[in-house]
Every structure is written in structure tokens, then in C-alpha cells.
Length: 254
Image (cartoon, one colour):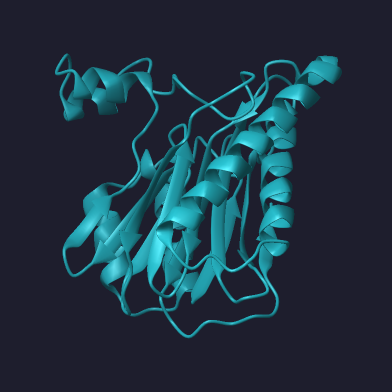
């Protein structure tokens, strides 16, 4: 199992509020996470990094998760705990009041993956069944699309496109989306913040994942394209490939 996290400030923002990483527990199982922070001043930085650090620590202390039920239970309790800690911290610091973060995490084993998300950072999967988004955006425009009030094309230009209906740490409790999928050799996962998905179409992301280029090169090309199209937001991406597991080291960046 191999994954790579890459993040870029973009061309407009004066700092990067995204955080994330690819982490291995002592059993060689992989956890990929991206968090896109929000809040006044630089509180978004605090929320996204805090969520990433907390999930990394929990993962490194975790037991081997051998079935989807155990993985879903671990993720549910972990996300609940992280939400409480981020929310409680926001109440203790005036400059952090109202801060929060999107949160997408993929727990990957040799047999299955379990994915959880809050907000509009996404996870896609490439398999023999094609390329598809496997998370649901918790955003105003996605609800308008799902209810038939606007089209998907209208959503791309909607003035309230960035309004979230759910985020991590903004309320005392939150209910994350969690589901598991089968996972086979040759499958690929793509996790990203909306700095990428708002600038690069699903069809283009699909084409990038079909190449046999190194993960780092593919991610670099994706980020360059998002910046070429304006780069108004921070851009973060993780690609995970099902290869031989490894048990040492991790990748962590912000």
C-alpha cells in the first residue's frame, strides 16, 4: 500500500489552511487524511492541523482492523472525539471562535477501504467499475442539485458554492458519513480539497489516474493545472495505490 500527500498554497491565498498526511499503523495499514480549514484570522490553520495531528496519533496507537465493521466503529468514535476536541479548543481561544475544517479520511487495508467525510473535501475511487466520487459533499449547492432545484452545471457557477452545511469542530456534535468498499490490486484512491475539485473536472481527474506515472508526478500535474486555472484556493491531494504494505515511516506535511 502506497500513498503520497501533496499540498500547495495556490496563487491567491496568503497562507495554507489545508493539512493532511499519509500514515501507517504498526500493522502496515494505511490512513490518508485531508483537512481544509476555515475560520477568522488563521484559525483555519489551527483546526485543520489539530484534526490531522489528532487522527495521526489515534491511528499510530490503533489495533489491526480486520473487517469493515471494526474500521467503521474506529472511524466513528475517532471523528466524534476529534470534533469534540476541536470544538472545545475553539471556545477557549477568542481568535479561534467559529473555526472548523472539512475532513476526509480513508482507512485502507489489503481487503477493503473505509471512508469518512465531513464537508466538501472529496474521495474518489478508480476500479474496474470506473472512476467515481465515493463521498457526498455537505454543501448548499450539492443539496440544491440533489433536490432537483439546480443542475450540476448551475452548481459550478453558483454564488454560494462554498457554503458548507456541515464541518468538523463548528458544533458540539457532528455525524460523519462513513461507508466501506471492496479494494483490489490496481485500484486507486484520490482524496482532495475543493481547491482541486473546483478547478479540475472529474473527467480530467480520471484521465490523470489512468496514467502509470509516479504518484508524485501525477499530483504535481494536477496542482499545476488548478493553479493555471486561477489557483484561488489552497490545493491538496492524496493518491493511494494498492501495492505491497509497508510498516515503517509515514508522510506528513502541511
